[in-house]
Length: 79
Image: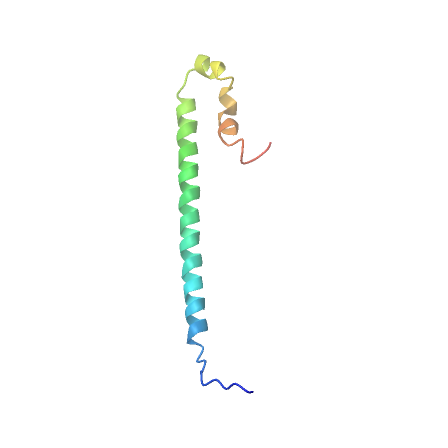
């Protein structure tokens, strides 16, 4: 037995899939940028808060003033 299809593919389905894929990718990249930005903003605020502390307070935290940035960003890089 043979089957015959009368469906005509005009490529619209593939076009829409491509467009929606591009939109999804675009908004995903914006979301990623916002998350990274908020993470760095929180870290910058932490650096400012630690810099505002006295040397005695930093010593109690076992942090030297010149190591504040390294302490805050320690999980992102190794020096």
